[in-house]
Image (cartoon, rainbow, N blue to C red; front, side):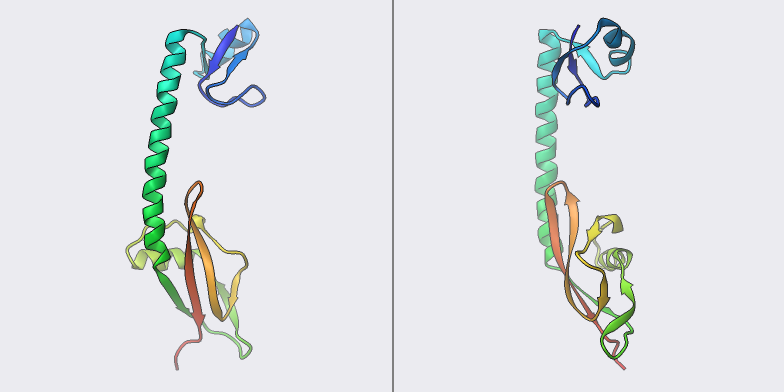
Length: 149
């Protein structure tokens, strides 16, 4: 039986692919679970329309994320941390602290979206990345200094 996949199915194909499978596999597994539909002109047209709608939605989401990335890139974060004489911190600056600093400035950034190349465990200026959506990241400057006495 020939089917159009509505979702990605492991070891079978990606969404929108036309695949040939055994009749029993199609009738008893793929079609009842909403993973595939039989190949017809109507189903093919509906899938094409849905894929176009999803592509447009992703484009709008990506455009909004680029605007947000531009606003985030303008933010410079500064942390005062205790350290030893050589500049090594007692602890480190964490993604949670960076997310909290963004929240104080009115941005909604999840700590899981903050990444750095190396742990921030000494005094200096660092660049961290905030991943907004697939392919859109905002570089943010983070400065770590000794507390003023």
